[in-house]
Image 1 (cartoon, rainbow, N blue to C red):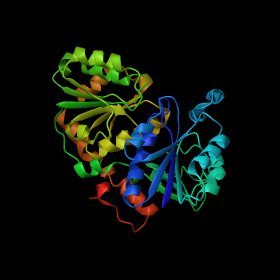
Image 2: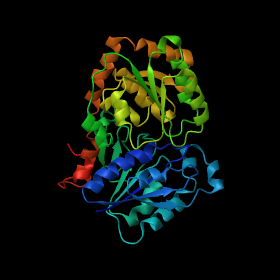
Image 3: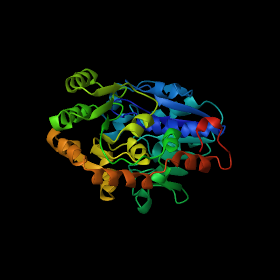
Length: 364
């Protein structure tokens, strides 16, 4: 089976789209598929994250300067949808692919219709539900999406919908480690994505610098596109008991040994829930707000709010409140009920039914 994946990463876009596509690609490859990525060479791109996993990346040219003036998510593409579609078809080469997977907020039905000639099926990964798609399959792992009609009128009537955390695309390490019940806080994990342009990591370290929290050990993961490395290193040295970690293939090991996480409301939300890791969530992007509110209402996370409303003092108060064993253990118990870590397996089975994974997939 010949599969192409169209996704990008940059300091503006983040790395989450590429990471979740890489997870699905690994499971499909384990079932025998030939999977390749098509990624634009944005400044600060993260193509190496994919290449390090042994996937071939067909790099599209860097974005043209004029396209950066486009509004909203359109600026993430760097060129027009028509130009991107043509370049994508060129990168895919001759013949017809069996499947084209696209995970990009700047692409919609216009682009998808333009690339139809190069593939038998199109699958879209989305969590915005804000634009039409011409696709055969759509996956949205957002909590609460499965109970809504938010894609009504946005996709063809015969489109297969894979909705909710049941389809969260997690690496096998999370499923294999499994959840652990937390009833006290000794170690905190801080991670705000691949870029963290607003340095929310620094804000979290300021909150953790309070004398009453000085006994906590802290792991900080600095993303590959984080521009605040020196400032974070200085804060870590001042506080002490902070271990700084470079970009890594996954966070499963760090999450498994942590008792509390402080992070954003993006893709790592599902990883934390799968491992029963209680988390204080700050929505650092507009597309994280709705899902974070739904998760908070269900008692699955401690939602601190949008970044503009979060202060050092308010974050410190939330950390202190979660030192309470009852509150902490409640969050730890409820998380795994929402995410079992088998989403990539389920999705791959639907895409390649009846084909068993090879030994590299970590199938349990």
